[in-house]
Figure 1 (cartoon, one colour):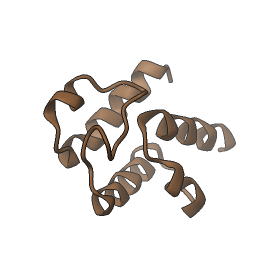
Figure 2: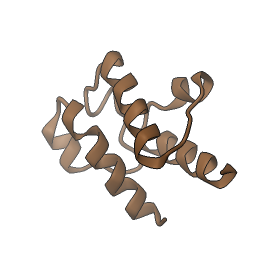
Figure 3: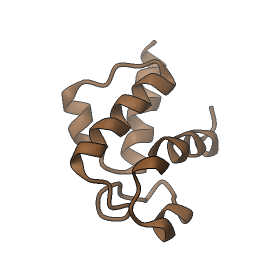
Length: 84
C-alpha cells in the first residue's frame, strides 16, 4: 500500500469526526487529529476502532495514545500490517 493510498483510507475514516472542514480538505501526513481537525478525544477512540476494522489490525493502548496525527496513524498501521 502506498503512502497516498494509506492517507486516502485514513481520510475516509476520520471524515465523520472532523470539526474543521478546511483542515480536512488539506489533510496530509502532517495533519494533527486534535489540533487541526478538532476531533475530540472520545471521537479519537472511534477513529482508532475504525482504523482497526479497516486494516484488520489490533492497536494496543500504548499505540493508541501516540495516534494523534496522520503520520503517527500511518506509522502504526504500517508497523501492524508488517507484523501480520
